[in-house]
Length: 206
Image (cartoon, rainbow, N blue to C red; front, side):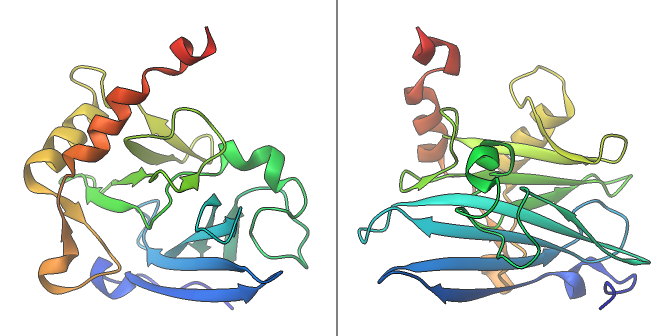
Protein backbone atom coordinates (compact mmCIF):
# COMPACT_ATOMS: atom_id res chain seq x y z
CA UNK A 1 0.00 0.00 0.00
CA UNK A 2 1.47 3.33 -1.03
CA UNK A 3 1.24 6.62 0.86
CA UNK A 4 -1.51 9.13 0.39
CA UNK A 5 -0.64 11.54 -2.40
CA UNK A 6 0.00 15.27 -2.09
CA UNK A 7 -2.91 16.86 -0.33
CA UNK A 8 -3.85 19.80 1.84
CA UNK A 9 -2.81 19.38 5.49
CA UNK A 10 -6.25 19.14 7.05
CA UNK A 11 -7.39 16.30 4.80
CA UNK A 12 -4.19 14.46 5.74
CA UNK A 13 -4.74 14.75 9.47
CA UNK A 14 -6.63 11.92 11.14
CA UNK A 15 -6.42 9.72 14.27
CA UNK A 16 -7.55 6.42 15.75
CA UNK A 17 -7.00 3.77 18.42
CA UNK A 18 -6.52 0.02 18.55
CA UNK A 19 -6.31 -2.39 21.51
CA UNK A 20 -4.30 -5.63 21.63
CA UNK A 21 -5.11 -8.19 24.32
CA UNK A 22 -2.33 -9.19 26.71
CA UNK A 23 -2.12 -10.97 30.07
CA UNK A 24 -5.30 -9.55 31.61
CA UNK A 25 -4.04 -6.09 30.64
CA UNK A 26 -4.01 -4.29 27.33
CA UNK A 27 -1.46 -2.71 25.05
CA UNK A 28 -2.93 0.41 23.46
CA UNK A 29 -1.96 1.81 20.08
CA UNK A 30 -2.89 5.33 18.98
CA UNK A 31 -2.46 6.31 15.34
CA UNK A 32 -2.29 9.93 14.19
CA UNK A 33 -1.97 10.92 10.55
CA UNK A 34 -0.21 14.17 9.66
CA UNK A 35 2.61 15.53 7.53
CA UNK A 36 5.60 14.99 9.83
CA UNK A 37 8.40 16.10 7.52
CA UNK A 38 6.71 18.81 5.45
CA UNK A 39 6.99 17.06 2.09
CA UNK A 40 3.25 17.21 1.34
CA UNK A 41 2.73 13.45 1.81
CA UNK A 42 0.74 11.95 4.68
CA UNK A 43 2.69 10.22 7.45
CA UNK A 44 1.69 8.28 10.59
CA UNK A 45 2.73 8.95 14.19
CA UNK A 46 2.12 5.78 16.23
CA UNK A 47 2.05 5.80 20.03
CA UNK A 48 2.05 2.47 21.88
CA UNK A 49 1.39 2.01 25.59
CA UNK A 50 2.72 -1.08 27.40
CA UNK A 51 1.13 -1.47 30.87
CA UNK A 52 3.33 -1.84 33.92
CA UNK A 53 0.35 -2.64 36.16
CA UNK A 54 -3.42 -2.70 36.13
CA UNK A 55 -3.35 0.78 37.71
CA UNK A 56 -2.74 2.53 34.41
CA UNK A 57 1.01 3.16 34.53
CA UNK A 58 2.68 2.30 31.26
CA UNK A 59 5.75 2.69 29.12
CA UNK A 60 5.53 4.65 25.88
CA UNK A 61 7.11 3.99 22.50
CA UNK A 62 6.60 5.97 19.28
CA UNK A 63 7.07 4.79 15.72
CA UNK A 64 6.90 7.05 12.68
CA UNK A 65 5.88 5.95 9.20
CA UNK A 66 6.71 8.39 6.42
CA UNK A 67 4.85 8.36 3.14
CA UNK A 68 7.13 8.38 0.10
CA UNK A 69 6.40 7.99 -3.64
CA UNK A 70 7.70 4.41 -3.42
CA UNK A 71 5.99 3.31 -0.18
CA UNK A 72 6.39 3.67 3.57
CA UNK A 73 9.63 4.52 5.38
CA UNK A 74 9.74 3.42 9.03
CA UNK A 75 11.52 5.30 11.84
CA UNK A 76 11.48 3.48 15.16
CA UNK A 77 13.00 0.88 17.46
CA UNK A 78 14.46 -2.34 16.08
CA UNK A 79 11.54 -4.81 16.13
CA UNK A 80 11.01 -7.99 14.07
CA UNK A 81 8.67 -7.48 11.11
CA UNK A 82 6.20 -10.02 12.49
CA UNK A 83 5.83 -8.17 15.83
CA UNK A 84 3.93 -4.96 16.69
CA UNK A 85 5.60 -1.61 17.27
CA UNK A 86 5.58 -1.77 21.05
CA UNK A 87 7.76 -2.41 24.08
CA UNK A 88 8.85 -5.97 24.77
CA UNK A 89 9.75 -6.89 21.19
CA UNK A 90 13.21 -6.94 19.64
CA UNK A 91 15.40 -4.14 20.97
CA UNK A 92 12.50 -1.85 21.86
CA UNK A 93 13.19 -1.83 25.61
CA UNK A 94 16.85 -0.88 25.15
CA UNK A 95 16.00 1.74 22.53
CA UNK A 96 12.92 3.21 24.20
CA UNK A 97 14.58 6.48 25.23
CA UNK A 98 15.59 7.10 21.58
CA UNK A 99 12.07 6.54 20.25
CA UNK A 100 9.78 8.04 22.89
CA UNK A 101 8.71 11.53 21.86
CA UNK A 102 5.25 12.00 23.36
CA UNK A 103 2.69 10.05 25.39
CA UNK A 104 -0.09 11.63 23.35
CA UNK A 105 -0.33 12.56 19.70
CA UNK A 106 2.00 15.56 19.31
CA UNK A 107 0.68 19.04 18.68
CA UNK A 108 1.98 20.76 15.57
CA UNK A 109 2.91 24.26 14.42
CA UNK A 110 3.96 25.05 10.85
CA UNK A 111 6.61 27.63 9.96
CA UNK A 112 4.81 30.33 7.97
CA UNK A 113 7.19 30.63 4.99
CA UNK A 114 8.70 27.15 4.60
CA UNK A 115 5.80 25.11 5.97
CA UNK A 116 8.24 23.16 8.17
CA UNK A 117 6.32 21.22 10.86
CA UNK A 118 7.40 21.59 14.48
CA UNK A 119 6.02 18.88 16.76
CA UNK A 120 5.27 19.48 20.45
CA UNK A 121 5.23 16.35 22.57
CA UNK A 122 4.95 15.77 26.32
CA UNK A 123 4.60 13.01 28.91
CA UNK A 124 2.29 12.80 31.88
CA UNK A 125 3.30 11.21 35.18
CA UNK A 126 1.73 7.82 34.36
CA UNK A 127 3.57 7.27 31.09
CA UNK A 128 7.31 6.65 31.15
CA UNK A 129 9.63 7.47 28.26
CA UNK A 130 12.55 5.50 29.67
CA UNK A 131 14.58 8.62 30.53
CA UNK A 132 14.78 11.13 33.37
CA UNK A 133 14.15 14.36 31.47
CA UNK A 134 10.65 13.52 30.22
CA UNK A 135 8.70 16.25 32.02
CA UNK A 136 7.58 19.38 30.18
CA UNK A 137 6.97 20.14 26.52
CA UNK A 138 9.42 18.84 23.95
CA UNK A 139 9.87 20.41 20.51
CA UNK A 140 10.97 18.29 17.56
CA UNK A 141 11.73 18.82 13.88
CA UNK A 142 12.50 16.20 11.26
CA UNK A 143 16.08 16.55 10.04
CA UNK A 144 16.17 15.52 6.38
CA UNK A 145 19.99 15.36 6.37
CA UNK A 146 20.32 12.88 9.24
CA UNK A 147 16.87 11.26 8.86
CA UNK A 148 16.18 11.82 12.54
CA UNK A 149 13.40 13.41 14.55
CA UNK A 150 15.62 15.74 16.54
CA UNK A 151 14.71 17.51 19.74
CA UNK A 152 15.40 21.23 19.72
CA UNK A 153 16.43 23.40 22.69
CA UNK A 154 13.43 25.61 23.45
CA UNK A 155 15.44 27.52 26.08
CA UNK A 156 18.13 28.72 23.65
CA UNK A 157 17.49 32.47 23.19
CA UNK A 158 16.54 33.43 19.64
CA UNK A 159 16.42 29.85 18.38
CA UNK A 160 13.67 28.49 16.16
CA UNK A 161 12.50 26.28 19.03
CA UNK A 162 12.33 29.26 21.40
CA UNK A 163 10.17 31.12 18.89
CA UNK A 164 7.91 28.08 18.41
CA UNK A 165 7.54 27.67 22.17
CA UNK A 166 6.75 31.38 22.67
CA UNK A 167 4.13 31.26 19.90
CA UNK A 168 2.58 28.13 21.41
CA UNK A 169 2.36 29.70 24.87
CA UNK A 170 0.55 32.70 23.43
CA UNK A 171 -1.63 31.19 20.69
CA UNK A 172 -1.73 27.40 21.19
CA UNK A 173 -0.98 24.69 18.61
CA UNK A 174 -2.91 22.32 16.36
CA UNK A 175 -4.21 19.00 17.67
CA UNK A 176 -4.64 17.16 14.38
CA UNK A 177 -6.83 14.45 15.95
CA UNK A 178 -9.54 16.98 16.86
CA UNK A 179 -11.84 19.27 14.91
CA UNK A 180 -13.65 22.55 15.51
CA UNK A 181 -12.71 24.57 18.58
CA UNK A 182 -11.00 21.51 20.11
CA UNK A 183 -8.49 21.58 17.26
CA UNK A 184 -6.48 24.35 18.97
CA UNK A 185 -4.74 23.02 22.08
CA UNK A 186 -3.69 25.59 24.65
CA UNK A 187 -0.50 25.78 26.66
CA UNK A 188 -0.79 24.10 30.06
CA UNK A 189 1.39 25.87 32.66
CA UNK A 190 1.28 22.81 34.93
CA UNK A 191 3.24 20.82 32.34
CA UNK A 192 5.97 23.47 32.30
CA UNK A 193 5.86 23.65 36.11
CA UNK A 194 6.50 19.89 36.31
CA UNK A 195 9.58 20.38 34.13
CA UNK A 196 10.95 23.07 36.44
CA UNK A 197 10.22 21.02 39.56
CA UNK A 198 11.96 17.92 38.21
CA UNK A 199 15.29 19.72 37.96
CA UNK A 200 17.83 19.14 35.24
CA UNK A 201 19.17 15.75 34.28
CA UNK A 202 22.71 16.53 35.47
CA UNK A 203 21.52 17.41 38.97
CA UNK A 204 19.69 14.07 39.25
CA UNK A 205 22.91 12.25 38.43
CA UNK A 206 24.84 13.82 41.33
